[in-house]
Length: 304
Image (cartoon, rainbow, N blue to C red; front, side, top):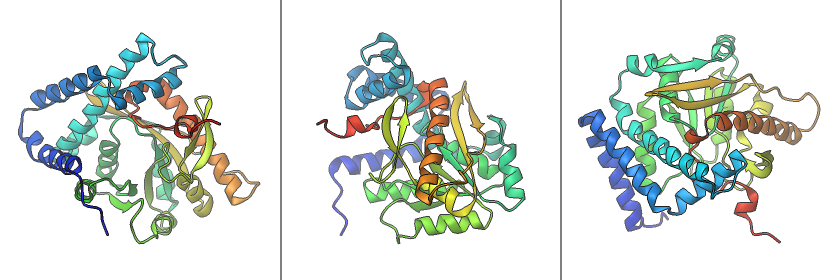
């Protein structure tokens, strides 16, 4: 039985509904200003989410959370985060031509080469820039794909977000609460030579693969590595980011699956390689990394 949503959950869902309804009908300059102002106000309050962002950014930069440079970087980060939501509300009304023309891409050739040969592709991304815009771009290029979505609260918001992504041309599977066959469906899509895209640096199951990430231990989802080992699909890291008013996508080299080792050992090695690529991408554009949650194990678990 589903828990009754709280008042806060209902307000959040209503806010998203209003955003998708109203934002596309208002001048873009006005709504962009409003979201930027909202980001600055939240940043100035120094609530828990902002403090967590600063702690995470401090790890990335090898600095103290109290460093003035980290404080300034967190303001850029909050503006980037709110820009993502502003664009999410406008994205369904954007033309395919605009989506395609304003994306600057590096290294996407091997993706199309693999798909042309009938080999599935796993696109693994950190929570950076505008993931949904990247997905809309890939669909507009002629490559609809399958992805997995976190089960948001309340349930109505999860369904609304799913409908939004499906409207962009994605096939969306729930991370939890589905029929339990998500891994099997993803494997089928890959074996059929199709692409899938997965957010891949934050483990939501507490059963992920332990990796070293910016000098400390964390867990990352096991799915991308296991799927690469299980299906032979190409695992390609992608770094999305904002580039002025436009968007950037950097496709990195395929991560090779080791020849030796058990399935679990191979998946662990692949996941660590993926973490290393993410480190580089995040370090280059830390302001576009939208990580406002606890990530590292020493932050998640009490010490001795």
